[in-house]
Each structure stands twice: as structure tokens, then as C-alpha cells.
Image (cartoon, rainbow, N blue to C red; front, side, top):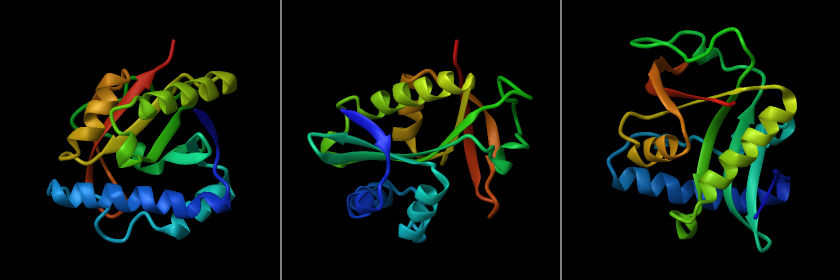
Length: 169
């Protein structure tokens, strides 16, 4: 597998993966990603800012993720807990999704490993992310990849999310 920056021509494959994820969440009764987000414009902006990455296998895009080193304003306040680290640079990961045909094959773990390498190369030793309380698949991925539950954050629209962090050694 290859982990690389997203190119504009990857957008159709990414949007298919996102549609799959939206369908899965809807079927599970999770209201995350059910309001037209994320959409193509979000991914184009991620590409423009250098945030968007894909996992490619045999020439096919099989997963997507945004990796942000610029900070995440919604992480400035955490409730009912605390971040494991404060006042150090971190990477925030968002919009992680894996093609439904590749789930359970270690794709997400591979991407987390590649993100950890990126972080270490930049001297960054913390990765933070968040997910919907009902998104048990994401919570399972977080736990499997060494993330620790830290508390609750609120998105700009007021939606509650579970916040997790992984500290790199």
C-alpha cells in the first residue's frame, strides 16, 4: 500500500468511499455525516491546504484521511476530561474513511502508522481526533491503534464528539 497526498483526480474515488461511510452510519442510526458533509468542496479545500491523503493499493484509492498540523480550534476546550498533552504541537486527523471492501484488512492501522511517521519527521508527538458517540467502528479503530479517550469536545455547530489522543514515543 502507498500513503500519499491526494490529487484532484482522486475525488471521485474518495466521494464513493464517503458515500459508503454515510450509508453505513445511516444504517447504524448514527447521525454523523448525514447532512451533506463531507462533500467534494471540503476535499478540494483539504487538497488546497495540503491536508488530504489517500491510501492507494494496486492503483486504487482505498481510504482517505485529513491530517492537520495547523491546530484544531474545537480542541481548545475539552470537557469531562483532559488531553494527555497540552502546549505541544499535535496532528489532528479528520474525515478518515476506508472502502467497505477493505474494512478489517488493516488499512486504517496502516494509515495511522504513516501519520505517525509524518509526525515524528516534523517533531510532533501527539495525534488527536474525535468521533461521534455512536460511531463504535471509529472508537474500535482508535482503541486498536493506541488512542486514549480524553473527554468531550464540541464542534463549531455545537455537536458533541468524543475526543481521543495518542502520544508518540
